[in-house]
Length: 322
Ligand code: DGY
Image (cartoon, rainbow, N blue to C red; front, side, top):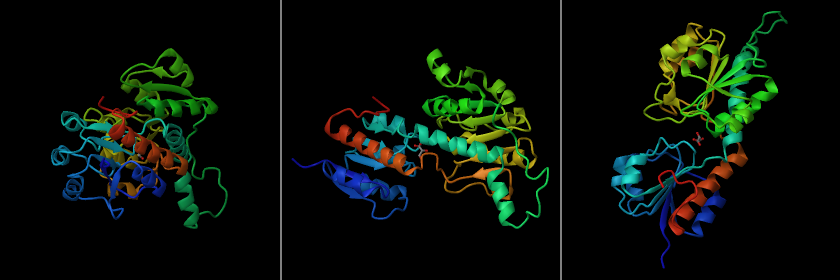
């Protein structure tokens, strides 16, 4: 019996490709370039499975052009690059890679929070530019993280991992989420307390965004929300770019309406609003939340497990449209 045919859209770890070759006829994008939609549709036309990453837009048009497709396996927990409704209508299973990246992504949220509050990258640029002539009482003063109130918008598994880390900083945690966590989970998340979005923005000293990107979460943080925040507050976004209105954030940072921001994700990655570059009170990173070597390996294997299960066993473990 011939093996199912799959396509891998970007360069991934060779050992994961080898595992997949044990189950499938594997074709790979010969380069690591992001494929144009027509190229992608042509590559997928005769495939039963696709192993993709957040850089591929699996649109309704591409899905309609691939009648043999049975599984779309994303190597990411976020899946806003995939038209889930179109895939579901076409009877295609869609999977993601939850859980394996929770702790690593929470670590990175903290890296951004601390770097932003204590002006770490700004200080390094200042030092490298030769501006350090002597110690002064007021050089590059930041805001405190310990003892402050952390506001988390989107209290899924990553949000909860971020909250757990706040215990060591003696912080209070408030969160805004579609639904309330169980009392047990709230207790584990440093006694986190559910509040409305407005209360969170007004009360938090540091706000971290970890919610999924959907039509409803588009521009969750815009000019009106930034205006509610304390002038000493910081904002960290490790979720998806479109959740923040970048132009409004740049205005707020420029005017000092908030103290700073740590931004790992942008609306049109890898492009980003040039206004960020003129600001010293923002820490910018290129979508690195899950980027530790062990976690990227775990995500790659998780996506492979999903694809193998989808095309050989029926229902994959991390199916988004059961
Ligand atoms: C995810 O898994 O959604 C991450 O953003 C990819 O790095």
